[in-house]
Each structure stands twice: as structure tokens, then as C-alpha cells.
Amino acid sequence: MSSKEKVCVTGAGGFLASWLVNLLLSKGYIVNGTLRDPYDDKNAHLKKLENSAENLKLFKAHLLDFAGISGAIQGCTGVFHVASPLPPQAQLVSKDDRNTGEAESVNNDTVPYVDVRDTAEALFLVYEKPESKGRYICSSGSIFGEGTRSWKLSSRKLQDLGWNYRPLEETLVDSVKSYQDSGAIIRVDAS
Ligand SMILES: NC(=O)c1ccc[n+]([C@@H]2O[C@H](COP(=O)([O-])OP(=O)(O)OC[C@H]3O[C@@H](n4cnc5c(N)ncnc54)[C@H](OP(=O)(O)O)[C@@H]3O)[C@@H](O)[C@H]2O)c1
Figure 1 (tube, rainbow, N blue to C red):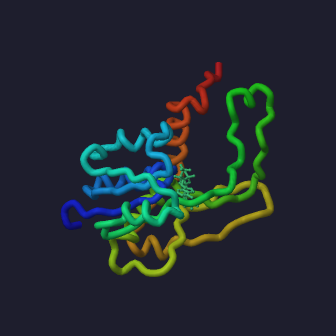
Figure 2 (cartoon, rainbow, N blue to C red; figure 1 turned 45 degrees about the horizontal axis):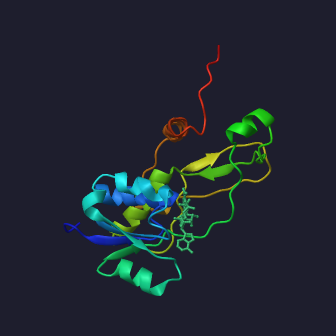
């Protein structure tokens, strides 16, 4: 990369976009990130990322706000368009639900998975490699359940470009640690 290349990441405070911004900053990129509300506390983590003070600039922009988005992509060599309106997710188990058992149940189907850090690395790889072309499937594997629905996905095209993914064990261990650190789950000793 030429030093200090500038790229834009839309929806910079989102789950995937935050990991991507983190990766880009760690690689020396200048990042223009768009947010609907730069002052919302949920975006405060961006200011704590390595190199963010010097290399991360945040822009207030709704996806349909032409002027806002134009300002954010000005001078950029690339745009990572990650912002996306998503359907409501399955309800997480709250501390109260653990006691009342009122959490929503989830089918025990076979599901494909990918570590969000590996997805961010895939986006970065596709951006950096001149030979990248067309669409890519980014999936590390499937977790097998007992349901009837199953998926067969291949990320061979992405792997041929140089993509690697973390072992499932690492993803699970890091996820649990992260949930514990955030207080989403609490450790209960077996004794
Ligand atoms: N999570 C993953 O591991 C993963 C893996 C592969 C692909 N993806 C894809 O990546 C995309 C983002 O997923 P995510 O998990 O990161 O979701 P997320 O955390 O909900 O992030 C979505 C982002 O989009 C922004 N957004 C939504 N509507 C907008 C609008 N009208 N204008 C501007 N910004 C808007 C949200 O901003 P606000 O904060 O203002 O609401 C938020 O920052 C989705 O298309 C998803 O399918 C995700």
C-alpha cells in the first residue's frame, strides 16, 4: 500500500464495520467512517481503536443523504459499503430471562458460520488484491445441528485469493471471553 491511502467505511460503528475499521487502521490506512449519529455512545469504541486519533475521521451521514456520503468518500481510493438496514435479530438471553426461562428458542439446524474478524480480513483482501473479481462466499464451515435445514457453501474462491480463517475453537473461546468481559454472560462455577 502507498503510505496513508484513504478509504471510506459506511456504517463504521456496526459490528462488521468496526472490525474492518480496526483492521484498516492497523494497516496504516486513513479511514473516513460514516455514522448516522457520531455522538451516540454506542459508537464510542471507535475512538479507542489504535491510530484512530490520527487516522480516523467520522462523518454524520444517512445512506440516503447524498451530500453527507459524498463528503465522506471525497479523496478516497476505495469505499467499503458495509452499512445495511438489517431485519430484527433473535432476542438475546437477558439476565432476567435466565431466571424466568422466557428467552426465544432457536432451531437446532446446521448453520454456516464465520468469525467476524475473518470476514473483515476477507473484505480487506478482496480490496487489496487486483486479481479479485465478482462475488465471494465467506464461510469457515458449518456447525452441525439436528434440524432438517442444512447449507453447503464453499469459500474456495476466497481461499485461492489467500484468505485463511481461524479455527472454530478460537472463535468460540474469544466469543465467550468477550461476552464475559461485557457482562452479557456470567461465569458460574461448577461446584
Ligand atoms: N456480522 C457479520 O459477521 C457479518 C458477516 C458477513 C456479512 N455481514 C453483512 O454486513 C452488513 C452489516 O452487518 P453487521 O452485523 O455489522 O450489522 P450491524 O452491526 O447492525 O451494522 C449495520 C450498520 O448499518 C448502519 N445502517 C443501517 N441503516 C442505515 C442507513 N439507512 N443509513 C446509514 N447507516 C445505516 C447502522 O447504523 P446505526 O448504528 O446508525 O443503526 C450500523 O452501523 C450486513 O449486510 C450483513 O449481512 C455481516
